[in-house]
Amino acid sequence: MYEFRDAVGADFEFLYELLYSTMEDYYVQTFGAWDEAVERGFLADSLEQYRYQVIAVSSIPIGCWARQYSNESIFLAEMQILPEHQRKGHGRRLLQLLLAEALRLDVNVHLEVLTANHGARALYERLGFVVTDSTDTHYQMCWWPDQGPAARSS
Image: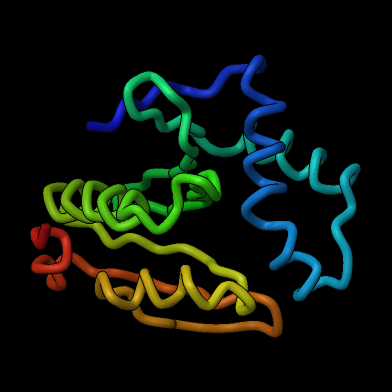
């Protein structure tokens, strides 16, 4: 169902518009404003640090994710779905693919989510993630392989 391809330089504007369309409201709630120059710089830095993939359905880009792998864990640095493709189960199914991979590798999955993004936190919790720490702006969340049924449910 999903097609994944590594993001390239030509994807920068798509990835920026995706970031803006999915996160601007949460950034304003959290930080008071959206600063385009800062966010473009953050995205450019993130593209160098993490493996970004464009996610498509029937060759139509619907979002992206960025992951970083180690021997102990997978860090989900970003996962964004275009607003017109949200609330259709894509986030849940993509996370289930990631959790199935983590289960196969016997590693945990961790991530951060803005405290203002209640919908994302609820999705993560439904799949078995738990809050392990928090700041004024973010929740750190983790999923462990012994929570495997969440990865296997369809």
